Length: 281
Image (cartoon, rainbow, N blue to C red; front, side, top):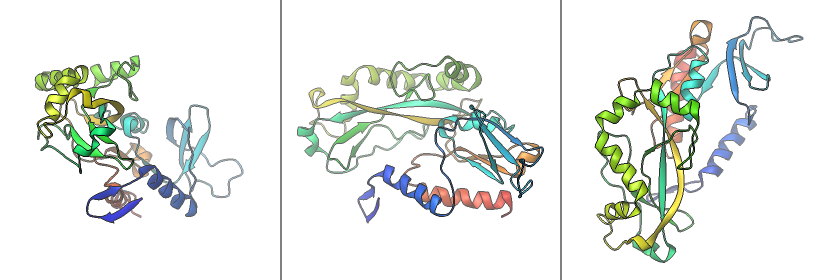
């Protein structure tokens, strides 16, 4: 949970998320999981036997044919935010391009080298923080992440591949322009991902005592990076609605810049303000 301390942030974000969900349920909401959205549309008639008539005119269907009726819809779909937005007729631009971030771990006997968070000054051309040192609540030290293009929306492993996702990334986004504009940066990231010695040299700029034998490969995450057709990485919030009758009842959060977890409450307040304005609540 969040602790009011000058050097401590969110200790266990899973518990924070579960607490948010419980608050939502206590307020009368329902939480559905494994509900893969396939279609969003305006209902043509009220459900059979319904006493509310067309009070809930938005129909969301999943791949199993099940449906949920809503008065208003707010989506925050992360890696699939562009595809979910398109279901309500939104412009496909910007596209989501997944970047895998690999972490290294400092071996336990060397964790004494890091006393707190160490963040380099980020390159203003990229919305990535660069390799940094992050102490975890279990005492481990994470080093990273890097930023490697993933050829699958949920490509958490180096060789994860999905044909549809790969074609979408290469053909329909501004990736080719991004690559040409930042070729040397991309090659550098790939080189460091393949050869740990190159990453160690970078880490030694901050802590010279670290050696190759002090680190092991760790977990990975995938960042949902919005990219426009001009090859520009979108580093600001992007809100969108639907078309026609959907436009006044749907709000899509298509891009929410990192750090989303540590700023979740501030981001939620901003989204609530947008909801109230668009839906005139």
